[in-house]
Length: 456
Ligand code: PXG
Image (tube, rainbow, N blue to C red; front, side, top):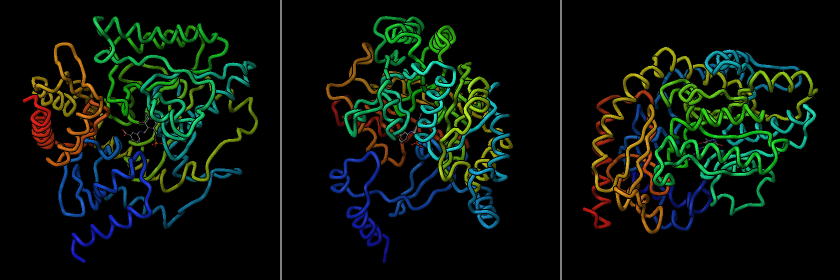
């Protein structure tokens, strides 16, 4: 079969049998699936042999880039030695043990225990069960409410979707989990009005205090937030936001859950978003960059305060997954973290390639469609607007973003559109010239979008 026949063959089968995540299947079937067949460095290639520079590191996860032989070798060796054994019933495997120590080392102070799962969603399900069980053991079982934010993303299992603040997800497969409340997000560009960003950061944080008082402080167990909202469109909070959230959680003795699934493992120029924003989490779910997406693995880092209660007062904590601490996934995660350390990727994002991305993206700030260019480390968001001065969006939110996303693909660069915010999160190993290529192609795609909607 030649490449075209092969593609048609795969597309036909895909259409008949494969249900895709977060996909309008009728629309997909009309357009045909793009089949990604290989990847190397920061490039992916489809079944027609077309190459794209991957401005998204897959789905915000391939931190060390594609084609890392070290990771494949480690997986292969571990599969031959011990492909699987569980961590239940008094057993453990060496990679999971060693990974636990490394994670305790690199995560913020006070996070010294690890609970393994396989996805960000499972990590957040684990968080919900831990929060509730913690307060039950503390003699305050009514503290079962968890406060999150609108436009947060915490996964798509029932707990993940409930914690998340995505209206489109709440409207399907409900009812959602009870006792989850959502407050405003710290999105100054879209919702800050005439306030300065710093004023607005305090307003958004104080919505937490209002909600705690509304529900009753003795009913609230935890607050959960991403340091920077990823899937929500790379919403970077004003500098005043996280210190105020921390103050409020401390004041009312509420557990602070920091979802590091996207921000973790170097993305923001520190090991964790919690380091970048100086947050002290009680629980810290993480996934994605933990293995650079080579194999599925996630974890919840458990702070000393919670670990002490769950370990010493709980008896058996009746929670866990067949693949919690899977030896092959853990071995790959260990090797992935070794690469990040040895190649000094975190420092590189902070001191070199993050600032370089910021500098290059600044050229887009003058573009007629771009309302702002916002970035921290190697995560960036650019709202597309109809009026730059008033920060006004478009009549039908999401339409222009989708047009722009499609032009990006056509021009050979992968970017995500979150509504009308174009976002980027490339592999941490990306070079200066590859950043130049992304920005060049993105500019061409933005120009094509502006022309199409009559703005240029
Ligand atoms: N928390 C955060 C902050 C995430 O970004 C999850 C939890 C859930 O992880 P799993 O491994 O269960 O998917 C995520 C996942 C997108 C997109 O379109 C983002 C995610 C997943 C899928 C798509 O931006 N983030």
